[in-house]
Image 1 (cartoon, rainbow, N blue to C red):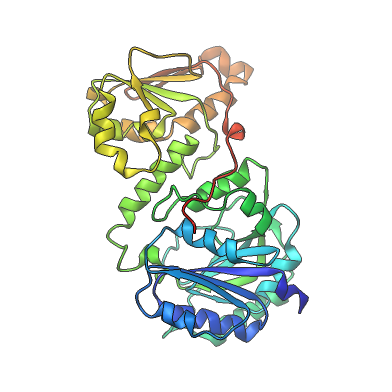
Image 2 (spheres, rainbow, N blue to C red):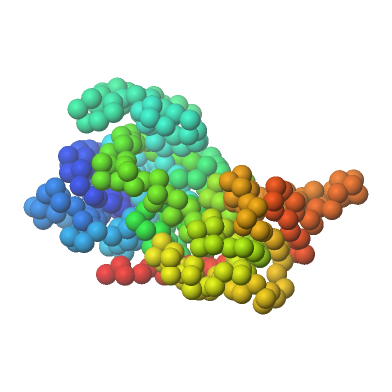
Length: 397
């Protein structure tokens, strides 16, 4: 059918071969001609041999023994895809009937489609428009395909229609050409985490419309992906924090920020130490400090692909910046370090209050004073829309 040629399903693999086989069999039971693109870096469980033996002209695949990031994985998949639209999927998904048709029907040029996931009750507090908690099984052995099919049939029979949402998701479908123009996922985020938030931020500054597609449904086993695998379970928190720090370095706000504004925000830090500065540096556009630059870079450059030498300057050379915050590391508490992470939203709220005639009569919202953090806002203009939407795909061959 023509609609089957419109979408390529991009699937990153890292072991879990049983789930890959189940994913593949389900797609082929529903769609014989939909293009599936499998990419595996570093699988060791027979995944690569299985790919080599797969006789399917509508499958493209690439694998290497070397491990690479999630961004490399999906960028390679997009590169190989031949359809107009591409959709990111995990291999621990079971798609529902109508999945591809509903994406094709909902698509409009320069929109980001978000498909719907049903998940077992593992992360029940993470409420999103695109997620429904319903237990059809926690793994392949306990999965109730019949009950899931009945659920999907009920959704398909409903009057649910695609709608605009603000709830972001990695589980998207978008034009390949647009994604390539933007450089795909940023490989700065190693090995994973926050690459999806970064992509969404780049869609955001283009005023892209996110469209939730209720009838494009997939069941997600959640804990079988690499984020929650035995290989990464002990490392996940540390890797997540590295991703968050790189997101701040790039966008100067939190991935979960209320306003998602980037400011020319700098810190002037006295009595700095390398360890203390590591809790400060990522959250500013630049840091002026009395600590010799080399001491910090020698200890922490290995934590990021971003060049830290451009981010640290001597305290006696401070040019004009829109927002300047003063910190004395000796006085800072853990609560202050958390406040530092919220400065973008604090400035954004002050920007709104500054425009209120009555509120601005009683308080100077150009001043920042919270805990042991003090500063001055000389210009409230956010800068994120001047940032590049493009992230060159690196080392993707």
